[in-house]
Image 1 (spheres, rainbow, N blue to C red):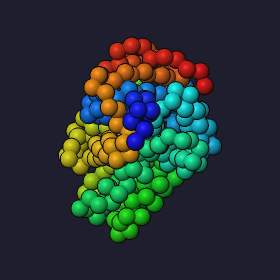
Image 2 (image 1 turned 180 degrees about the vertical axis):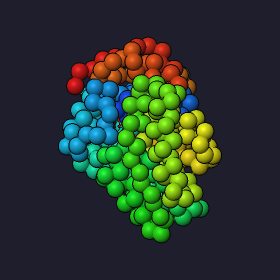
Image 3 (image 1 turned 90 degrees about the horizontal axis):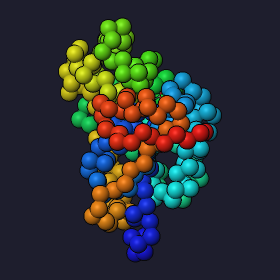
Length: 268
Ligand code: DGL
């Protein structure tokens, strides 16, 4: 099939509002180090969680148009908020594959051997109801407990997770959720895995699910079945872009991923 000589070695691109998507990207890169990758952190519009659907669609379009110019073979929406608000509206507008985190992981979450599932996510993701809708497609009997976490993204981006006032915010949100007796809690925003250590101070680490694990396996399986994997043995290239504050991005990223070069600033 001629895809292998034409687009296999083109980049796969990831985006999020900031460093959150690196929780997905770092796992992907670890598993497939020969892939050429692009990453866009839309730091100018951060946080996405309090933006309107229309705003989120326009940010996603800008980023996907930018990726299209770079001949990507696929785009990973490493952002729950954008997956919930923008994916449906843009999914037919591009010729490359688009992988949205929520819709890609819903089946796996629905098939977990539990009946009570908590979801921590941004206000926009919770408002969309997409987690419940997608999971219930596969398992209508699962009880879902969605809860929005207001300042968590800012806490991560400012590296404030060890400040006492922020620990109190996280603890109180967690206590609220625990009143529902969930058997597992999905960290339904790609920034939240950065807070696992804080959350684990107040409950068992095993309670939390980072969907990035499932998501990356899903993407790799799908690339493989579509004959889209890079077929070179060389180590893949990497380009990281942001729409504001490149230096701050580099520092905030450090906990999950070492960014070698200062990200390239793109004005949107
Ligand atoms: N990390 C993103 C998500 O998964 C967006 C967080 C935000 O900017 O509010 O939802």
